Length: 192
Length: 299
Image (cartoon, rainbow over all chains, first blue to last red; front, top):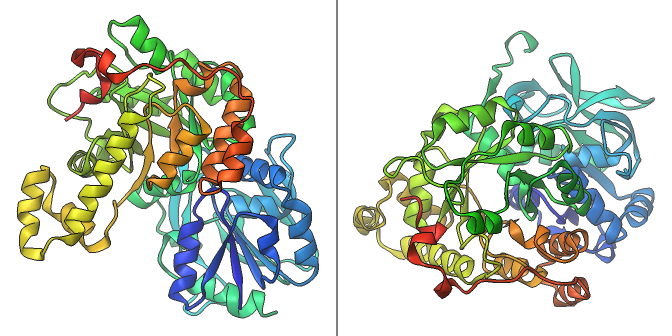
């Protein structure tokens, strides 16, 4: 199984390390040609504006959409969840999204860094359900389209969802050292 | 679960986590909302809200303090990326004020005139994270023990001369390699030599790296400078005077962002380095009197 991690900016190394702990060697993707034979792509947390500008300059948008259409699963964490959403609220007017997942995401929904937090979540479909969510200037998922399953919520807002071979989390499993959501992505989302 | 979600804010993980999200990115000094917008459009991961960039602070002389709250607030309101601001070393009230203005990260910075020549701010007291400067491993670990969630090598701010940034980055890297290589029974002595807490020195020994994200700062003026610091092992770069003291700030800012992402790709660095217009005029470190070297501030 070949899993790529978009390595333009942000916490891509932490995803690679978590994959490594699960016995999967991640590919640090810096150019669209590297998407070639990937079974799955993780778009990490970082600054969504910075990542989207680099994606535009290095022409990632169409190749990612095409590879997703051809069967490549995608998981977006935080900024990554913003980048895969069909609709984004509170984004810069020119911020382009991949628009592959039928969710509406609100950027910086919880506020500034002083409002960043950790909380226990009930995450469906992982062993022992409870997962420590780390939310950093995080978005939340405001609405789900048809066929999108809610996987976790916090304080009345959806913070994780799945639509077929697409996974979105508003928080950062890669900062916890707990690989269960990575395992879920590999076993359930990529393999689907 | 929702009744008892065990929510906590201001934790070390939340503080260091934001620094993790900035990695591989460029943090730019700005003095107006317009500059902040330009930085955001160029792909900066954060901006540093200032009253004057380091080169102008250096030129003006006198006492340099926290920026006017009006400027900080205007910049906070103008962009959607994180905003940082600088307080003087040891000036915990400036830090309290900046936290109350809604900034996302505090820089306890040697660019401003120190307010305390013995003690730094107790950074554990704050909800928002701090970044602090360092010239070597001991200084980095002292700041981390005071609660810094991110460090940056100091370089020599406002010079457009990368030589001190390189010196400090190499020193930190060499000292990490040294600590990682000594035997367990030598660690206490290493801690004494570094002037750093034993527990942190042991952590570096066990892990072979710093416990927090480390950016490079102080003299980066070109895309190649940024890529040089990345190849030397830093996690990202601060560019202060280098952008807005140059001929074409928008183009240079974007070029430095691209060079920081593709720091190992010389073809890309070559392409983005073309036709950037005038770079900031640099200063030779030997031309700066010892008393005006900002890197000597902080202990």
